[in-house]
Every structure is written in structure tokens, then in C-alpha cells.
Length: 430
Image (cartoon, rainbow, N blue to C red):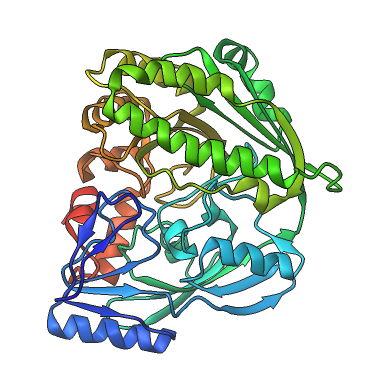
């Protein structure tokens, strides 16, 4: 048996029979055929930034660290191997004068893991990262190498861009990028009531808008990112270190440890935190604005909702927080995305608002997450595939209009369930 694997948060662990490190698509196909012959299930793992058991297996664990290279650049189309981390991708694109149109706030994930779980950023005109995929290469259970795009095998393309590892293993992806661009970031504290009163304007008038609510307060931190022609207001190095490293990681981590040990201090810590973050405005290359370091570990649940349901879900969440027998130490994040046509995307067929809730590692969270999910599910909520949920296939089938099409394609590509585990059995059916 191999050494155990754990995800970033430490809430998911597994011990595989064997670990494979393929470096080419042909080697990956060989590994899959061998596992199938031996009757061993297979899971590919990225950098472990999912909170669900989606990557767990006691069979063959495939690590894509040797499939992380740039394949080619053709204008604004960039093809990379699936194991490339987003931080490396961003640097690679910048070296070619390119950028991803949008990003989330963490760049530690592999591109395949980010795509497969529906990772997204914020911005009313932008879908999840999978909407930037122009073509992809997928290795299936029998070792076949399938290539698809909107024109070639469009159904496979609609399914594979967000596939939670259930259809095969991504080996290459081609991304449609944009010329490198600069963002002006404006971040400042505000009152929650002011955000609600002007929410439509905030979302419509900024290229990327989000806010963080501090539990037990009426305070939020808003973030507005707008594309500008030049970087004329760079952030001083000391200020970036103070805000993003010292305050957001070192000090916040200490506050979380204190709150976990002395729960009665959490509301006070939240009120102090809400007022400790001062306003700042700066310009920088897009990926440096989108992505920030996250070293304070947590577990997370996130739900995508129809935008019209956001206020009801958020007000319900506030009631949940007030009624819990324990305290919530992390701010609540609210983001916005555009509709897309990817079968298992949280944004399929509708513009979305997202609510992400977190809890510090080692602190209780189950009742918090379950009660929040009970509010969002009847409102059309769709769980982020890389973040914790308690749903089953029967309830998810009603949330995703193309759910049956996805599972039918899964039956065709993986009839023996080489890529199944307990998580996919629960959310997709056995």
C-alpha cells in the first residue's frame, strides 16, 4: 500500500494501492488499461484544493505532476497539459502577452481540477473557467483518447468541461485567452444595507464585483475590479505584504485559533476584523489582482443560485448563523457569474449568484453547512462540485436540466465505473 493522500484542508484522506505519474497521454492510457484489467478503480488528483471526496480511491491514484507542460501557443489559443497549476499557467500566459479572461481567488489548483469542478471567479459577463475551454483531450476507461470541441463531438464537449472526474482523465486542454490586461482594484469596507440598496449597479457597472460579509455584524468588504489601459497605481510592496500576507494570513490565522479555543470571542473578533481592513485602490496585472495567497486552512460549501433568489438565501443564512450552537469564524463570500451551456455547470442556463460559506479547520461546521444547504436547495441551488455538499443524485437531477444526459454519457464511456467512488455514487448514482 502507498502512503496516504490528503487534500489541502485535511478533511479528505485515502490510501491507494498504487500511484502512477504518467508524463504523456500514451502513458496515461496505458495506466488506465492496466487498472481496468486488474479491476482497480482510478482517480486522478490535482493539488487537493477540493473539499469533497471526489479524488479519493483505494485503487490507482494518478498524479498529473509530470503532465504539466505548455504544448503550444497559436495566437490566443493556448494548449497545456492537464496537470499544470493555475499559478504556472498565469505566468506562462503573461510571458506570451496573454491572460485568462477571469480567474478565481486561488491559483494553486491544477487546470484540470479547476475545470472539472466548475471553478469560477466573479463578473456578470463571465462564466466559470470551463467556458474559456476551446477544446480538450480526454482519456477514457478503455484507454481511448477522445478529442472534442464545440464542433467535434459537441455533446462530449458540453459534458467533459465540468465532469467531476466521472468520464475519464483530462490530458490536455486548449484555452481561448485574451491579451494581457490590467485591473484597477478598489477594495473598501461598507455597510451591508448599502450593498443591497445598490447591488444591481455594483454588479452591472464593474467588470468584477464581489463582497464579503462578516458574521455578527452589518459590515462587508466590497471588491470592485475594472479593466483599465495602464497600471498607473501599483500597490507598494509593503502594503501588499501588510494586507495580503500579514493581516489576511498571519493575523487572521491567529484570530481563528483564538476563536476556536474561546468561541465567545468570535463575535468581537468579527467586528474588529470588519473594521480593521482599510480601503485601498491599486492597479496590477489581472492575475495578480484576481489571485491572493490563502494559508489559513478551512472547509467550504458554496451554492450557485438564480440571482433573484440571492437575498432570500442570504437572509436565511444570517438566521442560521444567529441560531447555531457554535460560532462562525470566516466571512461569507458573494460572487456573480454569467450563464453557460455546460451540462453540469452551476451556471447552466442562468445567470448565477454564489454564496460561499467557510469554517476554520478543526471547528464544527456540519450543522452550519446542512442548514444552509436546506435553504438553498428549494431555491434552485446548485452545489459547487469541489466544495462540500450533502446532496444525492435524486435531488441533483432536478437541479440540473441536462443531468440525465450527463449520466447517460457516463454509462457509455465508463460502463464498468472505473472512475467511480463513493462520492460519484452519491451525487451521480452508482
